[in-house]
Image (cartoon, rainbow, N blue to C red):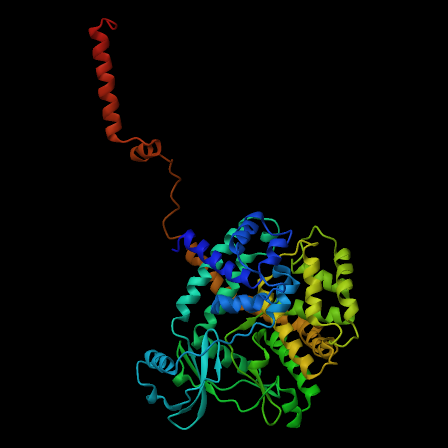
Length: 518
């Protein structure tokens, strides 16, 4: 277990790096910052020269790989880090200098316990991508297929484990201060971050996530996931089909290749909704570098280290919330927040509906270039404090991905309206999943499942309460406390009784000798 002084030293060191980028100024000035945190910030920034404009992204970049990932997750938390910091963190690029090719080859051989030439005919020395956790090289397998090989950076697991331990320690102490810090639930935020990071640090799990998403999206035309080469994949190395396409960020190249950018933007939005609402399992790292457009217009996704999952009930609430916001039914949106217990019951549904109207009404009918999903989320975060809404960690990845998808869709088509694109899909999903037929089907499924479990339930009851045998039921016997049980209960032992007897005998003899007892 890491000593508290080690955690404090790391926090001060990171804080000093952040101070050099002016990234602590907002924390120090925020009236909700607990006094102990403000004092620590002052110590960290002492003697530093701070720039006039804070560079939060630069601070996280300099602190290290785990901080880069943490900064990207905090980019969707303006309630936690502030509006200015959240906007700046959106520019945080997970791009680091590459590891030497010899170290990558050694890592491949260590993971497979065999020469890399047993699996690959060739590997290009220059990586096609170098991020905080892994880097990717183009390669050709021994059977002649072109693939992408993703390899973990040496020592990255150990470094992440060390840094996350300090994040957990800091979050626990921050939450224990109570007040606004407790409402924001930093411990759960770090717990979710740790879970996402552990998934990214095990490339077998990333490969499994890609396989699951490919299966879920099999019936969706125009969006695909590359195939996994399981024979060349393990915990530290993942091999996938090579994607030939144009990065979705290269707008001019896409138009020159004859692609319909407006159609691409709508298809991307609907692909995200299909993943999130229909299957409840979505690609949560849909930034521009992870999406390509192939020659036939198919959108191909890569990098499945961060995936989001939403259970059926939460998806139903999400669909109704989105539909309510697109149609202006703020009362129903408010009711869902109370049903989901996102808002404590002592608040007024009507007052919350009015607050939601203030957020949603300005967005209706306007292009995303004027008002956006990101702005909507900012507005929702602004009213959470007034209604004592705690952070919902299971929705953080969804919020982050919505902002990413909106950004890409806007770049492809500045006039796109996310609500207009989403409304038909959400309306259809609600009709299919929440309509009368769906309710009857769900009830039948649940009731039949209950009936099928009855025989097993009866067997378990009989095992717990077996039938009577041939002998008559015995008469009740009185409860008698055993001698050793009583001594144990009273905290006495045989030696205690012996000692008490000797003391008593001595006192009696002394009293007789003194003439006190005749």
